Image (cartoon, rainbow, N blue to C red; front, top):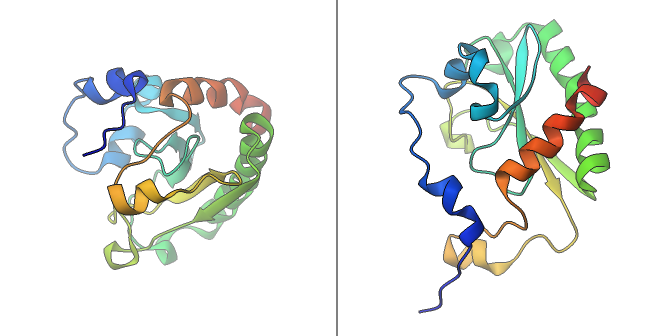
Length: 165
């Protein structure tokens, strides 16, 4: 059996984090003093921007309304419009800061559509680079990241006010 080691990820995967009861995203809404611990990049009155704890690729973040709903059609159109504006700014942040060559952006609405957290809608922004896909995800159920989660978070957080402020 082949083994793939990533010792730089030890701290991230071995850290004991508190067990969150209920909706993870509502927990983030209700704990603004824990933004760094929770990976929050930015907060607006209507929504927040947070790093994906289990990213598809380094720098993967989400824009999430503060309003708890599993239905996009229930979201206030003004909030959706502002989230969309921030998605545009987020794409620019990923391209400028991480040199992303492309960005996947989208929502999985409902469990059957692939939503991991189906009870609270969220918009994904996933940076992409030429050649960033490989066989290991498909056959090994393993992801390989080129850099540490915390390092990417700090880099994006540092630049957030330039793009979102």
